[in-house]
Length: 372
Image (cartoon, rainbow, N blue to C red):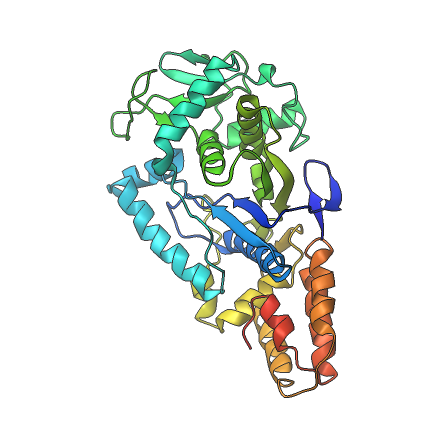
Protein backbone atom coordinates (compact mmCIF):
# COMPACT_ATOMS: atom_id res chain seq x y z
CA UNK A 1 0.00 0.00 0.00
CA UNK A 2 1.18 3.47 -0.92
CA UNK A 3 -0.08 6.10 1.53
CA UNK A 4 0.52 9.83 1.44
CA UNK A 5 2.57 11.10 4.39
CA UNK A 6 1.82 14.72 5.24
CA UNK A 7 5.15 15.25 6.97
CA UNK A 8 7.24 13.89 4.09
CA UNK A 9 4.82 15.39 1.55
CA UNK A 10 4.65 12.38 -0.69
CA UNK A 11 3.25 8.86 -1.04
CA UNK A 12 5.37 6.16 0.55
CA UNK A 13 4.93 2.44 1.21
CA UNK A 14 3.02 1.76 4.40
CA UNK A 15 5.23 -0.78 6.11
CA UNK A 16 3.59 -2.39 9.13
CA UNK A 17 4.17 -5.59 11.05
CA UNK A 18 1.62 -8.23 11.98
CA UNK A 19 0.04 -5.63 14.30
CA UNK A 20 -0.68 -2.23 12.75
CA UNK A 21 -1.04 0.71 15.14
CA UNK A 22 -3.31 3.61 14.19
CA UNK A 23 -4.24 6.69 16.23
CA UNK A 24 -7.05 8.96 15.15
CA UNK A 25 -7.70 12.19 17.01
CA UNK A 26 -11.27 11.91 18.26
CA UNK A 27 -13.92 14.43 19.17
CA UNK A 28 -14.20 16.96 21.94
CA UNK A 29 -17.74 16.05 23.00
CA UNK A 30 -19.24 19.46 23.68
CA UNK A 31 -21.57 19.29 20.66
CA UNK A 32 -22.69 16.66 18.16
CA UNK A 33 -20.08 15.33 15.73
CA UNK A 34 -20.74 16.55 12.19
CA UNK A 35 -20.08 15.19 8.71
CA UNK A 36 -16.49 16.48 8.74
CA UNK A 37 -15.77 14.31 11.77
CA UNK A 38 -17.49 11.35 10.15
CA UNK A 39 -15.30 11.78 7.04
CA UNK A 40 -12.15 11.52 9.18
CA UNK A 41 -13.27 8.42 11.06
CA UNK A 42 -14.55 6.76 7.89
CA UNK A 43 -11.10 7.26 6.38
CA UNK A 44 -9.46 5.45 9.29
CA UNK A 45 -12.15 2.77 9.12
CA UNK A 46 -11.44 2.20 5.42
CA UNK A 47 -7.72 1.88 6.11
CA UNK A 48 -8.46 -0.51 8.97
CA UNK A 49 -10.63 -2.71 6.78
CA UNK A 50 -7.99 -2.98 4.07
CA UNK A 51 -5.24 -3.81 6.57
CA UNK A 52 -7.42 -6.52 8.13
CA UNK A 53 -8.18 -7.80 4.64
CA UNK A 54 -4.41 -7.99 4.03
CA UNK A 55 -3.96 -10.15 7.14
CA UNK A 56 -2.94 -7.63 9.79
CA UNK A 57 -4.27 -7.20 13.28
CA UNK A 58 -5.22 -3.52 13.60
CA UNK A 59 -5.15 -1.56 16.83
CA UNK A 60 -6.87 1.74 16.09
CA UNK A 61 -7.16 4.15 19.01
CA UNK A 62 -9.56 7.09 18.84
CA UNK A 63 -9.33 9.34 21.88
CA UNK A 64 -12.02 11.46 23.53
CA UNK A 65 -10.92 14.94 24.65
CA UNK A 66 -13.27 15.20 27.61
CA UNK A 67 -11.47 18.09 29.31
CA UNK A 68 -10.29 21.21 27.48
CA UNK A 69 -11.22 24.86 27.00
CA UNK A 70 -14.11 24.16 24.59
CA UNK A 71 -15.99 21.59 26.63
CA UNK A 72 -15.52 23.52 29.87
CA UNK A 73 -16.81 26.71 28.24
CA UNK A 74 -19.88 24.93 26.81
CA UNK A 75 -20.63 23.19 30.13
CA UNK A 76 -20.42 26.56 31.87
CA UNK A 77 -22.86 28.08 29.36
CA UNK A 78 -25.33 25.21 29.83
CA UNK A 79 -24.90 25.04 33.59
CA UNK A 80 -24.03 21.33 33.54
CA UNK A 81 -21.09 19.21 34.64
CA UNK A 82 -18.55 18.83 31.85
CA UNK A 83 -18.50 15.04 32.19
CA UNK A 84 -22.29 14.87 31.92
CA UNK A 85 -22.08 16.93 28.74
CA UNK A 86 -19.40 14.60 27.38
CA UNK A 87 -21.49 11.51 28.16
CA UNK A 88 -24.53 12.97 26.41
CA UNK A 89 -22.65 13.89 23.25
CA UNK A 90 -20.70 10.61 23.15
CA UNK A 91 -23.98 8.70 23.12
CA UNK A 92 -25.02 10.60 19.99
CA UNK A 93 -21.58 10.20 18.42
CA UNK A 94 -21.46 6.44 18.96
CA UNK A 95 -24.94 6.05 17.50
CA UNK A 96 -24.01 8.02 14.38
CA UNK A 97 -20.78 6.09 13.82
CA UNK A 98 -22.68 2.80 14.06
CA UNK A 99 -25.18 4.08 11.51
CA UNK A 100 -22.43 4.42 8.88
CA UNK A 101 -21.03 1.01 9.85
CA UNK A 102 -17.71 1.97 11.43
CA UNK A 103 -15.89 -0.95 12.97
CA UNK A 104 -15.39 -0.75 16.75
CA UNK A 105 -11.99 0.77 17.52
CA UNK A 106 -9.39 -1.06 19.57
CA UNK A 107 -9.62 1.56 22.30
CA UNK A 108 -11.45 4.86 22.85
CA UNK A 109 -9.74 6.32 25.94
CA UNK A 110 -10.72 9.59 27.56
CA UNK A 111 -8.19 12.27 28.38
CA UNK A 112 -9.31 12.25 32.01
CA UNK A 113 -8.30 8.59 32.23
CA UNK A 114 -4.65 9.48 31.64
CA UNK A 115 -3.91 12.12 34.28
CA UNK A 116 -1.16 9.99 35.91
CA UNK A 117 0.49 9.38 32.52
CA UNK A 118 0.13 13.06 31.62
CA UNK A 119 1.80 14.15 34.86
CA UNK A 120 4.66 11.70 34.29
CA UNK A 121 5.13 12.87 30.70
CA UNK A 122 5.20 16.53 31.71
CA UNK A 123 7.70 15.70 34.44
CA UNK A 124 9.87 14.01 31.81
CA UNK A 125 9.86 17.12 29.61
CA UNK A 126 11.02 19.20 32.56
CA UNK A 127 13.71 16.67 33.46
CA UNK A 128 15.01 16.79 29.89
CA UNK A 129 15.14 20.59 29.93
CA UNK A 130 12.64 21.14 27.13
CA UNK A 131 9.91 22.66 29.32
CA UNK A 132 9.69 25.28 32.06
CA UNK A 133 7.27 26.20 34.85
CA UNK A 134 5.86 29.67 35.55
CA UNK A 135 3.27 30.38 38.25
CA UNK A 136 1.89 26.85 38.23
CA UNK A 137 1.82 26.61 34.42
CA UNK A 138 4.21 24.39 32.48
CA UNK A 139 5.20 25.29 28.91
CA UNK A 140 7.06 23.35 26.23
CA UNK A 141 9.97 25.40 24.89
CA UNK A 142 9.93 25.03 21.10
CA UNK A 143 13.43 26.45 20.77
CA UNK A 144 14.68 23.25 22.43
CA UNK A 145 13.22 21.12 19.61
CA UNK A 146 14.99 22.07 16.35
CA UNK A 147 12.62 19.96 14.23
CA UNK A 148 9.56 21.97 15.26
CA UNK A 149 7.61 22.43 12.03
CA UNK A 150 8.46 19.02 10.56
CA UNK A 151 4.82 17.90 10.41
CA UNK A 152 3.00 20.99 9.11
CA UNK A 153 5.86 22.80 7.30
CA UNK A 154 4.14 26.07 8.20
CA UNK A 155 6.13 29.28 8.47
CA UNK A 156 6.53 30.94 11.85
CA UNK A 157 4.04 33.63 10.80
CA UNK A 158 1.41 31.06 9.88
CA UNK A 159 2.08 29.12 13.08
CA UNK A 160 1.50 32.23 15.16
CA UNK A 161 -1.79 32.91 13.36
CA UNK A 162 -3.00 29.34 13.82
CA UNK A 163 -1.89 29.23 17.44
CA UNK A 164 -4.04 32.28 18.15
CA UNK A 165 -7.04 30.76 16.37
CA UNK A 166 -6.76 27.43 18.18
CA UNK A 167 -6.35 28.71 21.72
CA UNK A 168 -2.56 28.68 21.84
CA UNK A 169 -2.46 32.18 23.35
CA UNK A 170 0.76 33.45 21.74
CA UNK A 171 0.29 36.72 23.66
CA UNK A 172 0.70 34.98 27.05
CA UNK A 173 3.42 37.12 28.74
CA UNK A 174 4.69 34.18 30.78
CA UNK A 175 6.02 32.44 27.66
CA UNK A 176 9.62 32.67 26.55
CA UNK A 177 8.47 32.37 22.94
CA UNK A 178 4.93 33.05 21.65
CA UNK A 179 4.95 29.59 20.05
CA UNK A 180 5.69 27.80 23.32
CA UNK A 181 2.64 25.74 24.22
CA UNK A 182 1.04 24.79 27.51
CA UNK A 183 1.47 21.33 29.00
CA UNK A 184 -0.18 22.08 32.34
CA UNK A 185 -2.31 25.06 33.31
CA UNK A 186 -3.88 26.41 36.43
CA UNK A 187 -7.65 25.89 36.55
CA UNK A 188 -10.27 28.59 36.99
CA UNK A 189 -12.41 28.38 40.11
CA UNK A 190 -15.26 26.54 38.36
CA UNK A 191 -13.00 24.18 36.39
CA UNK A 192 -11.81 20.69 37.34
CA UNK A 193 -8.35 20.48 38.86
CA UNK A 194 -5.91 17.72 39.66
CA UNK A 195 -2.99 17.90 42.05
CA UNK A 196 0.48 18.11 40.60
CA UNK A 197 3.95 19.09 41.78
CA UNK A 198 3.37 22.47 40.07
CA UNK A 199 0.11 23.03 41.91
CA UNK A 200 -3.51 22.15 41.11
CA UNK A 201 -4.53 22.47 37.48
CA UNK A 202 -5.45 20.59 34.32
CA UNK A 203 -3.62 19.33 31.24
CA UNK A 204 -3.16 21.22 28.00
CA UNK A 205 -4.75 19.93 24.82
CA UNK A 206 -1.68 18.47 23.09
CA UNK A 207 -0.21 16.53 26.02
CA UNK A 208 -3.39 14.49 26.35
CA UNK A 209 -2.98 12.79 22.97
CA UNK A 210 0.73 12.09 23.46
CA UNK A 211 0.08 10.44 26.82
CA UNK A 212 -2.78 8.35 25.44
CA UNK A 213 -0.92 7.32 22.28
CA UNK A 214 2.20 6.28 24.19
CA UNK A 215 0.14 4.42 26.78
CA UNK A 216 -2.13 2.60 24.35
CA UNK A 217 0.16 1.91 21.38
CA UNK A 218 3.80 2.44 22.30
CA UNK A 219 6.61 4.80 21.38
CA UNK A 220 6.19 4.86 17.58
CA UNK A 221 2.84 4.75 15.77
CA UNK A 222 2.40 3.36 12.27
CA UNK A 223 -0.26 5.92 11.33
CA UNK A 224 -1.52 8.98 13.15
CA UNK A 225 -3.78 11.72 11.92
CA UNK A 226 -7.10 13.49 11.80
CA UNK A 227 -8.51 16.49 10.02
CA UNK A 228 -6.08 18.60 8.01
CA UNK A 229 -6.63 21.50 10.40
CA UNK A 230 -4.98 19.51 13.20
CA UNK A 231 -1.54 19.41 11.55
CA UNK A 232 -0.75 22.65 13.37
CA UNK A 233 -0.80 23.19 16.22
CA UNK A 234 -2.00 19.86 17.56
CA UNK A 235 0.08 17.28 15.72
CA UNK A 236 3.15 19.48 15.53
CA UNK A 237 3.11 19.91 19.30
CA UNK A 238 2.38 16.24 19.93
CA UNK A 239 5.44 15.30 17.91
CA UNK A 240 7.73 17.77 19.66
CA UNK A 241 6.84 16.73 23.20
CA UNK A 242 6.75 12.99 22.44
CA UNK A 243 10.05 12.80 20.58
CA UNK A 244 11.76 15.04 23.12
CA UNK A 245 10.95 12.50 25.82
CA UNK A 246 11.31 9.17 23.98
CA UNK A 247 14.14 10.05 21.62
CA UNK A 248 12.36 7.98 18.96
CA UNK A 249 10.21 8.88 15.95
CA UNK A 250 6.64 9.43 17.11
CA UNK A 251 4.83 8.62 13.86
CA UNK A 252 5.82 6.76 10.68
CA UNK A 253 2.93 8.04 8.55
CA UNK A 254 0.92 11.22 9.11
CA UNK A 255 -2.51 10.94 7.47
CA UNK A 256 -4.43 14.21 7.26
CA UNK A 257 -7.97 14.24 5.95
CA UNK A 258 -9.58 17.00 3.88
CA UNK A 259 -12.14 19.41 5.27
CA UNK A 260 -15.85 19.22 4.51
CA UNK A 261 -17.69 22.45 3.76
CA UNK A 262 -21.23 23.67 3.39
CA UNK A 263 -22.26 26.71 1.34
CA UNK A 264 -18.65 27.68 0.68
CA UNK A 265 -17.43 27.51 4.28
CA UNK A 266 -15.75 24.74 6.26
CA UNK A 267 -18.15 23.01 8.65
CA UNK A 268 -17.40 24.00 12.22
CA UNK A 269 -19.19 23.99 15.53
CA UNK A 270 -18.35 27.65 16.08
CA UNK A 271 -20.12 28.67 12.86
CA UNK A 272 -23.01 26.26 13.24
CA UNK A 273 -23.02 25.32 9.52
CA UNK A 274 -23.26 21.63 10.24
CA UNK A 275 -24.70 18.50 8.66
CA UNK A 276 -25.14 15.46 10.90
CA UNK A 277 -25.16 11.77 10.04
CA UNK A 278 -28.41 11.15 11.90
CA UNK A 279 -30.12 13.90 9.91
CA UNK A 280 -29.03 12.36 6.60
CA UNK A 281 -30.14 8.90 7.69
CA UNK A 282 -33.56 10.41 8.25
CA UNK A 283 -33.68 11.10 4.49
CA UNK A 284 -31.91 8.03 3.17
CA UNK A 285 -30.49 4.71 4.26
CA UNK A 286 -27.19 4.58 6.20
CA UNK A 287 -25.36 2.76 3.40
CA UNK A 288 -26.06 5.69 1.09
CA UNK A 289 -24.54 8.12 3.59
CA UNK A 290 -21.40 5.98 3.79
CA UNK A 291 -21.22 5.77 -0.01
CA UNK A 292 -21.56 9.56 -0.27
CA UNK A 293 -18.47 9.97 1.90
CA UNK A 294 -16.52 7.25 0.10
CA UNK A 295 -17.08 9.10 -3.18
CA UNK A 296 -14.53 11.74 -2.13
CA UNK A 297 -10.80 11.11 -1.83
CA UNK A 298 -9.77 11.46 1.78
CA UNK A 299 -7.20 14.21 1.12
CA UNK A 300 -9.67 16.35 -0.83
CA UNK A 301 -11.48 19.38 0.57
CA UNK A 302 -15.08 19.22 -0.61
CA UNK A 303 -18.58 20.54 -0.02
CA UNK A 304 -21.63 18.57 0.99
CA UNK A 305 -24.57 18.75 -1.40
CA UNK A 306 -27.86 16.99 -0.82
CA UNK A 307 -27.89 15.48 -4.32
CA UNK A 308 -24.96 13.31 -3.22
CA UNK A 309 -27.44 11.20 -1.27
CA UNK A 310 -29.69 10.49 -4.25
CA UNK A 311 -26.66 9.62 -6.37
CA UNK A 312 -25.47 7.18 -3.72
CA UNK A 313 -28.93 5.62 -3.45
CA UNK A 314 -29.01 5.05 -7.22
CA UNK A 315 -25.56 3.53 -7.05
CA UNK A 316 -26.71 1.11 -4.35
CA UNK A 317 -29.66 0.06 -6.49
CA UNK A 318 -27.31 -0.73 -9.38
CA UNK A 319 -24.99 -2.75 -7.20
CA UNK A 320 -27.89 -4.70 -5.72
CA UNK A 321 -29.30 -5.51 -9.14
CA UNK A 322 -26.31 -7.77 -9.80
CA UNK A 323 -26.40 -9.82 -6.60
CA UNK A 324 -27.15 -13.00 -8.52
CA UNK A 325 -24.60 -12.25 -11.21
CA UNK A 326 -21.36 -13.95 -12.14
CA UNK A 327 -18.09 -13.70 -10.25
CA UNK A 328 -15.44 -11.22 -11.35
CA UNK A 329 -12.07 -9.75 -10.42
CA UNK A 330 -13.64 -6.62 -8.95
CA UNK A 331 -12.53 -7.39 -5.37
CA UNK A 332 -8.88 -7.29 -6.42
CA UNK A 333 -9.54 -4.10 -8.39
CA UNK A 334 -10.91 -2.49 -5.24
CA UNK A 335 -7.90 -3.68 -3.27
CA UNK A 336 -5.60 -2.11 -5.86
CA UNK A 337 -7.49 1.18 -5.66
CA UNK A 338 -7.28 1.25 -1.86
CA UNK A 339 -3.58 0.42 -2.02
CA UNK A 340 -3.14 3.54 -4.15
CA UNK A 341 -3.43 6.06 -1.30
CA UNK A 342 -6.94 4.91 -0.35
CA UNK A 343 -8.47 5.80 -3.72
CA UNK A 344 -12.07 5.18 -2.69
CA UNK A 345 -13.60 7.05 -5.68
CA UNK A 346 -11.62 4.74 -7.96
CA UNK A 347 -12.82 1.73 -5.99
CA UNK A 348 -16.43 2.84 -6.42
CA UNK A 349 -15.97 3.23 -10.17
CA UNK A 350 -14.53 -0.29 -10.39
CA UNK A 351 -17.59 -1.67 -8.61
CA UNK A 352 -19.89 0.39 -10.86
CA UNK A 353 -18.31 -1.13 -13.96
CA UNK A 354 -18.56 -4.67 -12.61
CA UNK A 355 -22.20 -4.20 -11.58
CA UNK A 356 -23.13 -2.76 -14.99
CA UNK A 357 -21.48 -5.81 -16.55
CA UNK A 358 -23.70 -8.07 -14.47
CA UNK A 359 -21.08 -9.22 -11.95
CA UNK A 360 -21.80 -9.85 -8.28
CA UNK A 361 -20.08 -7.07 -6.33
CA UNK A 362 -20.98 -8.13 -2.78
CA UNK A 363 -17.46 -8.93 -1.58
CA UNK A 364 -16.04 -5.71 -3.02
CA UNK A 365 -18.76 -3.62 -1.39
CA UNK A 366 -18.19 -5.42 1.91
CA UNK A 367 -14.50 -4.48 1.85
CA UNK A 368 -15.65 -0.85 1.70
CA UNK A 369 -18.03 -1.42 4.62
CA UNK A 370 -21.14 -1.22 2.44
CA UNK A 371 -23.80 -3.85 3.11
CA UNK A 372 -25.92 -4.74 0.08
